[in-house]
Image (cartoon, rainbow, N blue to C red; front, side):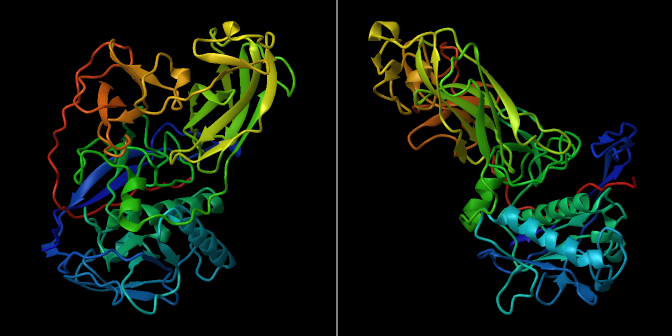
Length: 493
C-alpha cells in the first residue's frame, strides 16, 4: 500500500482586530487574520497505485463549461476521480474571477495572469504547467473553480490536496476560486497563485514551512507557509532549511527539516527560471572619489535577496542580511549601508556590492574605484599576507573551505572559524540541512540550529574560537503519511 489517509486538516481564519493599512489607500485597512483549525475525519486507505515517478505535468483546469468530480476510493485525475470529496458526483461551475460573475471579461485576463504566475514559480524545476488537458500520460490536476461547499468542506477552505512524503501522482488538488476575496485584481491573482502552487506542493512531497532554521524568522516568503501577516510577497519555493507547521510549529513528518527548493529539485530536476535578474548599484562613494566610514548600495530582485556583500579589491569584507520584508514583500531595491571596519588599510579600493538570493544566485554592482586615505606605497601599509600593487592592498592567495586561516578576509567565503588550536576557512550552515556543507564536511553546531562547516569528528566548533560540542546526528525518519490541508482565507474587506 502506497500510503494511508490519517486525517484531512482544514484550517480556518477569522478576521482579527488589528488590521494593517492598505498601502494603496492608507484610509482603508487590509483584512487582518486570526486562526483556528478543525480536524475533519477522513476515510480508509488510498493511493492504491504502486509507487512510481511523479509526473512533471501540472494541469490547471479552469473547468470550462462546467465539470464534474467523482468522489471515489481511488485517485484518477484523467477520469476526474478523487478521494477527497464524499462518494458520488460533484458539479463545478466554470472558473470565475475576483468578481465571481460568470463570463465577465476580466475572467480571461485574470486566468492568463494566474497561469503565468504558476509557471514562473515552478520554472525553477523541470515541470510543465499547462491549462490544456494533456492528450496522454498521467499528470497532477489543479482544479481551479467553485467553492469548498461543493465537496462538503467548510466555507473558509481555500484549497485542499493529497499529500505523501514520496509524492503523489494522478491526483487532484483543489483551489476554490470563489472562496477567495481580495482588495484588487492583482491581489486576487497573487493569492490564487499562492493557493495553486501551495496545494500542488503537497502532492509534490512538501509540508508546511514555519520558521527558517538559520535565523528563526517567519517562512512567510515561502509558498508552503501560512503566514501572511509578517509578509505576503509573491511566493517562491525557498532554498532554506525550515521547521514545519502551519499556524504553530510541529515536527516535520518526512525528514528532520525541510528545504522546499531542494526537495523539488530532487523530485523533478532543474528547470529554466523565468524570473528576471536582480540589480545592485553603489550610491556612495562616487566613482573616483574618497570613501569615508560607509559604503551605501541599492540592491534587490523580484525574488528578493537574502544577503548583500561588500567586496573590496576582489575579497569579501562585510555581509548584511537581506532587508526585512514588509506586508507586500521586500522593497526592490532596498538600501544597504556598510560600516567599514577600522582595520581596513588605507589604499585605493575597488568596491563591488554583491546581492544574493536564497538559491545562491548573485548579481554584482558595477565597480566603483575610490581611495581610502591614500594609496599604499609598500606592503608595510597593508595587512599581514597582503601586498601593495598599484596603490591597492591585495591578497595574492585565497583561502577555500578547509584551508587554514587567521582572518576572515583571507577566506573566499568571508568566514574563518574553528577552535583555539585550529581555524579554517568555512561557511555558515544549518545543522538539520544535510546539503548545507560541501562534500567531506559536516555542519558542527555553534548555537541553536546554526553551525559552521568543519571536518568530521574534529571536536569543533565555535565561531568565538572556543571549543564547542559537536552536533549529534540522530533523527527518527517519519514514514509515509497522508494528507493535506488548505490555507487561510481572506475575509471580506
